[in-house]
Length: 306
Length: 268
Image (tube, rainbow over all chains, first blue to last red; front, side):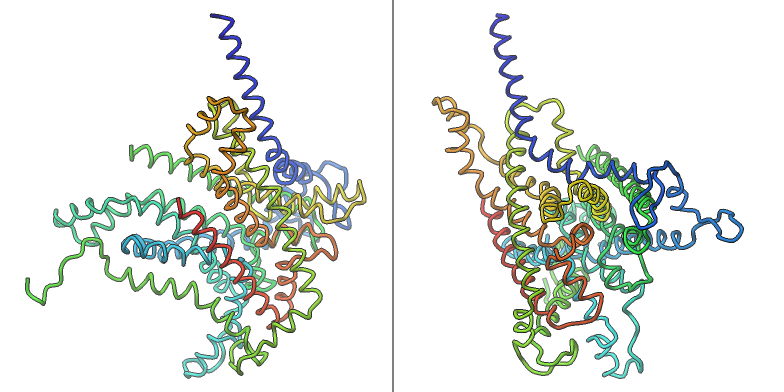
């Protein structure tokens, strides 16, 4: 029988080889134009900065110190880079607030869709999907129009005499937060809906039968059961919000930057490519940590479900 | 039961319905206003001055807008085609037959672009392409096509893989039993059944490419504006109702594509 086994083993090897060939185009494209360049960037973060952008071929750790520290131009002492700290803190804070607000708005929405009659559900879901696939720039632009000084909100407010002066909403952190909540809301609703759809409402009924109030049912039965969806939604909102570029660029004005804008600046007017590279790697590290936390949580809650 | 006591509805949560309706209004109000004011006779984005096609005409006559729109469309078409072809092959390799060593790595690599923040990919490509530009002197559109194709692959891959997994694999086995060559089985059985998945993948990739602004903004050569980067440039400067008109058309295009995609995926 060894001959037959050899034949089947050879066939299997051939099959595996063929399947590697099939995956090759996708892997090559992604390695070449998405992942490979990341390694070059790591190298760049350890080089000196060129005078007009680019790098010099000398090893240097200046860029990595520059992420957090700043050399005083007068007495050459090191201090914390306040500007970077402010931007990092703003990014984390705004991404966090966005996640919480989208959760507070998205959870009831997902619940509402789940409890519609079967036929209606598709329509509501469709209404969430449309903004999800609409150009992010256009949606951010729509918010910009709404809150500008001569925009419709200020017009209504001054027209009704609620405020005397138009409110300055554009170019503030508030504007960035509002824009991000608007833009990322579907990313919260869809995963929560996906896990709520599987919710067995007999559990809810059992809860009421055992004299639980609405709040207790929500807290002790529904939320624990849809937790995977809540975690997935939170991560899907938090990560892009942390790396948001368009919302701060359009709604925050030049001064209220977030990490992405700071990175972009280093490759433009800042002309400090190594610092930009180091900042990018820092951002990616934060994202990877968030993802790891998610994966651990997800596997733990699925382990409990089985 | 008396009329005064309402029946207890198990799945009702007080206030949730109101909140959901408010959310839907919030989702659609800004974009609706944008579309309505794109028909405004006046240059204002808050005061209505009568209906007109004025800004659509202005947009139509704007050479920059037309160039950018045209470039966006063919770029999305090219990138989505490449991404869909590569993703289809990869999806077949990862769903048919026994799992092979390294398959998890393949998954991880294919989904990687979804996990890396856009700005990071953007500046990494900026560095890499700057290098190639110096080495070869080439500054054309191939950079954009390559970058777009790469981040579109995972989006094309997901619906195609989902379709393959829900397909009945016994049909392919039956074809093989009836002496069809692997290629015949693929062309006559797998491909026709897979087609809706491929179209869905292509459309998703197309929309994603059309949507991209961060990566394109950082790697485009001079004079290589796409519609989103052109709009970003305009929006940073000052308001222009022309951009409103373009946005409205863009929105409509998304709605059409999504509707198509949605119903393609629904029908099983």
